[in-house]
Image (cartoon, rainbow, N blue to C red; front, side):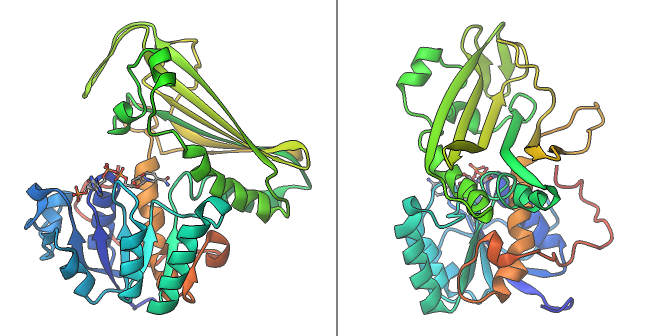
Length: 357
Ligand SMILES: NC(=O)c1ccc[n+]([C@@H]2O[C@H](COP(=O)([O-])OP(=O)(O)OC[C@H]3O[C@@H](n4cnc5c(N)ncnc54)[C@H](OP(=O)(O)O)[C@@H]3O)[C@@H](O)[C@H]2O)c1
């Protein structure tokens, strides 16, 4: 990987993650954007720059998968709403490396079949696959594992994701069942069903990285309700309905809780009970000797509040890994295989655009 090398990239899907990636690929001289796959008919035929709110790039979005497969590219940054392992394998067999925000992130039994297929496709195509995202895929695995180098002894590692969805609205508000009666929420499936399996990949990387294995995985879920109506751009969370959710997953090793993930998602803080969690952030707490805490948060915006940058970071984690993944040996590449990523093209003069927040 030389400093002058450029990587020809395709952006697959231009949702919230995909738009951040498009901007990065368009601005970073380490990359040449050569293709954009969209599903939304209104985006077909548009310049990638227009989709991402940037000057024209000359790259026109298509919904024609065959055209994308036929392109000569080093890597596809894969960020659709729905997982498609068949498509990932086709891309890998067509000679394109794939970095995906949907995982799989780490080989666990649950994802064994997908990983076997991905590895076979990598062998056929001479290509590599890497799954990463903020969480799962970074903040609960390679980041705390790196921090464990500062420890003499570890009793327990707790990882918190605190996201204020009122300040940073997203499509996930409805998907996650905010605004439902608490009983209704527990009675009907929502997008967090099965999420523990996905997050368990990150837990496994961390636990196995410490030389242990997960013996059991337990789950708790609690909700907080709105004290008053909470208006947001997509509607209103009515008083008494779900305005906060806390998911807690615990990975047990040697008969004790070793890794605990807390996901706190809330619509502001006018809730009962009052969780008083403050601004959006990630927090890693390592109990042991010497005890350690690390907080990862966006810098304060002009209003003094710290926004949630999880989606932006998910996109950038994928983009910055692309050169290493392209240069890696064929196969599934986890964070442990990647080692310390040395991103390319980040040190450059600022562009005129407003940034990635
Ligand atoms: N690991 C992590 O930490 C992490 C964090 C955030 C997101 N993610 C994952 O990254 C992916 C993208 O997230 P996002 O926030 O960008 O989502 P998003 O804003 O909903 O965008 C997803 C895009 O996928 C395309 N799409 C829509 N319906 C689809 C369908 N039925 N099948 C396939 N593609 C469809 C659309 O692309 P076009 O508009 O171009 O047609 C849409 O804009 C999601 O799968 C999400 O779970 C992971």
